[in-house]
Image (cartoon, rainbow, N blue to C red; front, side):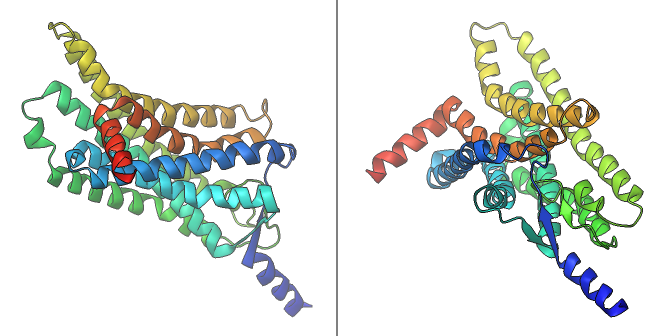
Length: 315
């Protein structure tokens, strides 16, 4: 009997089942097509942006290198989450292996934090460009971008790797159905028989430390930028200064608004369907990724011209 129980436990632990929208199963049908289109748009737009920056020598500047990093992070986050969600929607492929689930958990937490950190570095780039324009070429160099990229990688890998490690060490002894479309830390940890207080506390403290510190620094950068812009006396100087920050500010709004709505729905979980945070979590991995390159492509003249030149060469 004991041997049979052990065998059952090992079989159950080898796979989880991702059960999307437990209370609103009809959502899968009407979400599958828009989500597929958003995924294709995110992949295509970020791919075009990366190729344009790579091939156009006029775009080989620190600001565009940071934008390339953001596009790469968006692509990885999209590929980590959306194909599996679409496989569930289209083909009902709910099983996910134990190792794949924890790998997805790590990539989502790490790359999401890396994206937040990239926005913070981009805000600093705009702060120097507006508030210290004469010193900009000497401060924001290729070396600065390389150091910033190393900092973004090291900080976020070190601080997010304990999340899947804490979860994988838990004892999963029966329940294997994750009530989520993705392997979110708390959705998985709740299935274990062990006490998950440490997991919960680390997720909360780590998340707010990383995202909170980034958002505070972004807010401070834009406060200084706004103060410097309001002091400009020259005609059109204010408009020009604000337009250089506009694209970046719109991206931060995309990133933080969906995040804020996601947090608020979690806080008010008794008043909203439990499927709403699940939906927002999925959308947060694809909507900013699809819109980021479009915003920069439309609003940045150099990128727009670069894409046009590449298209002419292609034809």
